[in-house]
Amino acid sequence: MAPAKLRRHLETVHPESKDKNKEFFVRKKEQLLESQKKKMHLTQTINEKATEASYLVSHRIEQAGEAHTIAENLIKPCVLDITKCMLDEKSAKHLSTVLLSNDIVSRRIHDPASYVKQELVTRLEKTRFALQMDDSTDVAGLLGYREISI
Image (cartoon, rainbow, N blue to C red; front, side, top):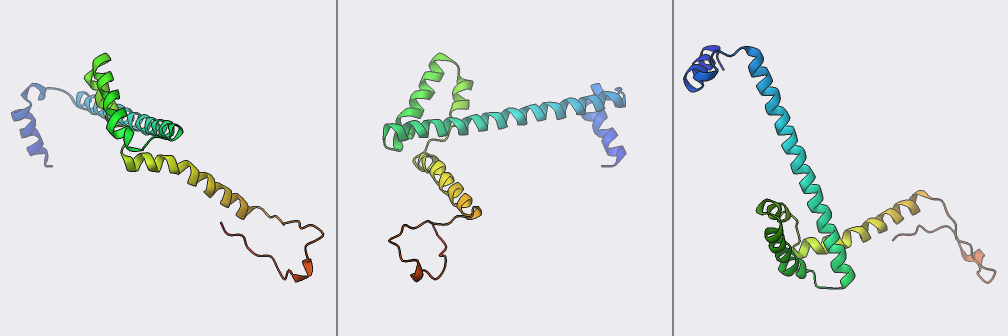
């Protein structure tokens, strides 16, 4: 923006700051950037904790053998009511970010299993191995190695 327009904006909209020196505005900018970083870090921390809580609840549902919809229909409303009653509205708002829908709970239950399977397949592909047969197996009929696919 043109310097003349910036000066006019400062004098008309912010007349209390027109006599401040340049260092004041530099400090103000640094403070603003620092506060934005703190807010971003806090938001990221809350999101990570909400994801972890979602995994923990999904794990409990799997262990109990309950329907996946119990989280969305019963557990989450109860937790929000307890938090509002015992703590405050702000804490309840943070807890409402925990995702507990039927699809999410189902995915959170099956994610670790698919990760373990993928890790096993990766290790088998990287490792050289051979199958040992007993004496009753006719090895003359084996023409070559066959790749194992899982």
